[in-house]
Image (cartoon, rainbow, N blue to C red; front, side, top):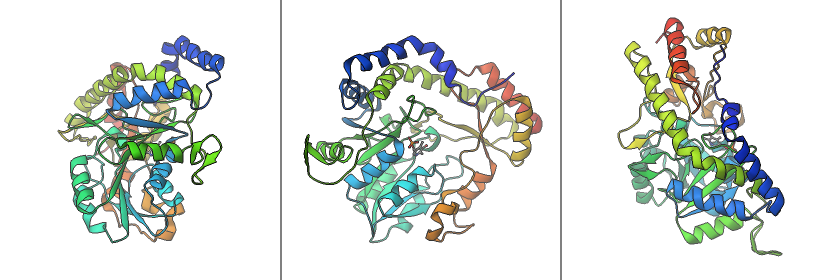
Length: 367
Ligand SMILES: *Cc1c(COP(=O)(O)O)cnc(C)c1O
């Protein structure tokens, strides 16, 4: 019996007719770009995340790039981020010409180790980008205290943290802005590329809106060169349908995560720790093992799909070798990268399937 890692088909079957109606609606209205569907989705997603404003974007990577540009970050600036994330986070920093400065993560939450941030701040530091990796919110109060004390901007990478909260407040609403990805496999996924920036300050909202759309003030008047990073109307209409279900899908993820935990922790396995003030949305559910290749081969034979997020820590990525980091610089992130294994996790997964995954894992995995 196959157990998928993510099953987009199972989700689609439940909402197929609504999705088709939504797409047809856009085809009829011809609101392909910056139309009513983007406006409607922006309002609803802002509300769901607890934000004042949202600007639709072409994807989660461009959302970070645009946020950095709108905050005026560029060459000669340094941006602090975490050594374990998806490559897009440092890539966006490099894209604006700034230098990424990594910080190690915590061993239990896999979030940026806030106790280490300040030692990496220099006169060139302009911004911190914490990543709510796996949907597990970082300690945003401490990040904001450090940022205020050192006059730094904060962009929260929320690509994996739709509806996640810290002390009841949505991720992405603490910093200057929060960037989201709606890549199909994310907790809220489009049927193509899409992203968003949420923002609380109205001036910054207006500036970001210009930065995604050719630096426009009027249709053919441009204040600065910015490029095109707009969200597409069909994707917004699809996301608006899915948003109605996101709360219940997220609850399902939480239930499945606690089921995993109840089956794995008694065997001594290390899984994701969530701080008492955080509400995790489990984009990924992972476990640490010392014989990962063996476990993955065994699972492959059983047709249980799993993954590794992410096998190479960012400071050791070939694309960033000019930064001259070396093995040993971020021991916690490096150790995690060797041991983590992402298990099946999506709203339509059943408890029985989770039990089966754990039953098999316990047979083969070593701590
Ligand atoms: C997915 C992801 C991104 C990039 O989003 P895209 O929409 O794929 O460009 C950025 N950061 C993190 C942490 C991600 O998981």
